[in-house]
Length: 482
Image 1 (tube, one colour):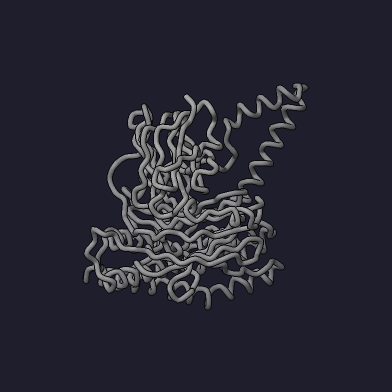
Image 2: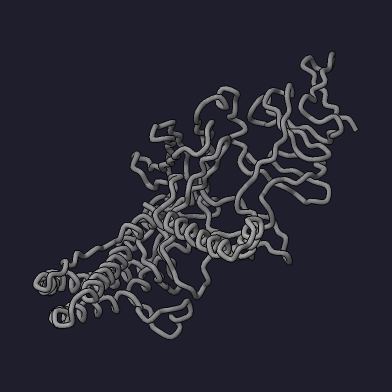
C-alpha cells in the first residue's frame, strides 16, 4: 500500500521514484500529465487527487472548494480515484463509489509558479467564456443527487498573499470602458443588515444575562435561537417583501480566489417591495467579442488580462444580430430604469411630506395638506400608471393588471430568451411602451415644476424644511450594480 510513481527521462534506461509529498500509506492508481503545461502532473490515489507543479519532484493534495454546491462544500471527499482525464481544460476524476467529479478550469493551476505564490497579488489570465442560456431541469436535492453545472460566465482567478484587503475587479469592453465593477467591500444594504443583526444579538444576550443565566447557558441559548444564521441574511419568501438585488462581492481571502462575472451589463434600477410578473431588472448579456478584466488591491492596480466572450456554438446568430439584440435590451433597461426611478421619486416626495406634516401643529398641518393635495393626486396617478401599486405579494399580478414598467421588463425577457435578432414586433412594442412611459414622465416633471413649489412655499411658511425630490436613494443606487 505504499505509493509508487516512477519517471524516466532517457526512454527507459533509468527510472526515478517521484512520490515526495504523498503519504506513505496512500497508494497511487493513476498518473496523468497536463496536455498543455509541461511538468504539471496529476495523480489519483486511494484517498484523492494530488498535483505536482515540478514534474513530480513534489506533490501536494488538490482539494479545491467550489461555491454553490447544494449538497456540500464542493470539496472532493476522501475517495479512491481510479482514473483521471483532462478534457477541454477541466480535470475529470473517476472515483470508486462517488461517481465522477470535475474540477472546472485548470487555467490557474497551469499558470501557477513559485514566483507568483511569493507576490502580494496576481491576476491569472482567464480562459474564454461561452455565452449560454441554461433552461430546463431541476436542481439537486435529497431525491435527485445530480451534479452541479459549472458557473455560467467568465471565471477569473487571482492570488492574494494577505487576506482582508479591498479587492476590485473591473470588467472592460473592447474599447476599455468599464462594463461592470465588483468589490470586496459590502454594499450599504449588507452593512445595514449586519449592524441590525448585531444589534438584535446584543439585545438577546443582554436580556438573557439579566435572567441570571451563566455565560455558557446564554451562549447555547443564543446559538439555538439563531439557528446558525444571521438576522437579515436569509433568503426571501416568494410572497414576502422584495428588495433591490445586492451586487456580488469579490472574495479577499489569502491564497487562490475566484470570481465569476455572469456576463451581464448593469441592471435596471429597482425599489423595495417591487413585484413584477414574467419580468425582471437583469441587465443585457454581453454580446460576443473581446473583453478584459482589471484587478486592483488596496486601491493599487495589479494587472489587466484579456479574454473573449464566445457565442453559443449551437446558435446561428451573426455579430450584427447580437448587436441588434444588445441595443434593444439596453434601450429597454434604460427606459425601465427611468420608470422605476420615477416611482422612487414619487415615494420619496410622499414620504418626505408625511414626515414633515407629522411634526407640525394641527393648524399648520391643515394648510400644508391643502397645498399638497393636488401634487399628491397628480404624482399618485403617474405612479399608478407606471407600476401596479396594489401588488403586495408575488401572486397579486394574477388579480391586478401589470403596468408599464412590468410590461416593458416582460418584453425584455422575450427579447433575451433566444440567441437571435429581435423581431420587428419587439421593436414596435418597445416604441409603443416607451412612448407611454415618456408621457407619464412628462406629467411627473410638470407636477414637480408647477405644484411642488407651492407645497414647498407652504412648508416654508409653516417653518418646516422644503421637500427635495430624490430619484434614487443612496441605498438603492448602491444596491443596483453599476
